[in-house]
Amino acid sequence: MRYRVTLIEGDGIGPEVTGATCRILEAARAPIDWDPAPAGGTAMEQFGVPMPEVTLESIKKNRLGLKGPLMTPKGTGFRSANVAMRQELDLFVGLRPVRTLPNVPGAWPGLDLVLFRENTEDLYAGIEHEVTPGTVVSMKTSTAAAGERIARWAFEYMRYRGRRHIHCCHKAAINPRADGAFLNAFRAVGAEYPFIEQLDMGVDSLSLLLPIDPSKFDVLLLQNLYGDILSDLCAGLAGGLGVVPGANIGARAAVFEAVHGTAPDIAGQGKANPLALLLSANMLLEHVGEWKIASRIERAVWRVLADGSHITGDLGGNATTDEFTGAVINALEA
Image (tube, rainbow, N blue to C red; front, side, top):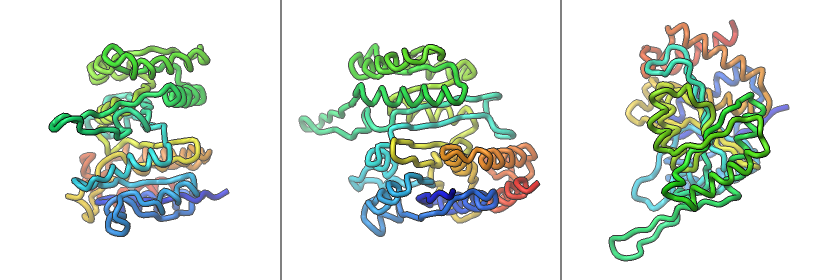
């Protein structure tokens, strides 16, 4: 079976990291046919919006996407292309696994966390208005339905991945209705999974304890804003945004993405590290059940990182994007 996947190259270093990732997947004989689609800066030039309907329709048709980093137009009145995509396609699961990789400077040893972020509500609903001159009100939305479906997704993921310990993180003491609804949904769904240890914690306490000892945590479940912020904190514990994958998943489509920025200062110079997008593509392979191919790619990446002679500048080496890519391909064939 082959899979048709919408491919969004991205801005800045996007074309370099997507090109490298596609080369590695081809070398691993991943059964993927690409369907290129515009977004970000390219789409702004062509369509006047950062996430055009043609791209959303491609993802709806293929039900799978791989996305490089996208710029967010400043001062244009447009929503972030990433936020627009999640809301338009109802990609309610923000999934960020964070692990320690070999030879990554600054990484916490033995780190192995999974963070789930509710992607569609909270302040990201984009409901705000100026009630009087100089006074703006932004609305935080929180529904029981959204809380229940992200909680169930997290519990099911844990059941099939052998995870046994989850924290629901919130600020219910300050927002007893909005955060309280999320916490109540977590508890209601959790009652169906008595074999999984379930705890809740204030997001401020979590922010304190994570950098001290992340080994005390296994799976984290958060609302949109908290998840956005703390997923980047967790990435920092692994060595940075350039070494962690990400996914946005809904009932009818899933888009896997590099979560780092577009790095325009090094675009086109052959310095970009494709690791984050490559690991995201590996998540895509796992999502469709291509576990053997995903495992081969992961082993190859681990060999290259452990060897250390073909790593890019952000990891302390001096290899180019092409050299790192070639080393992974060679490791696949070893």
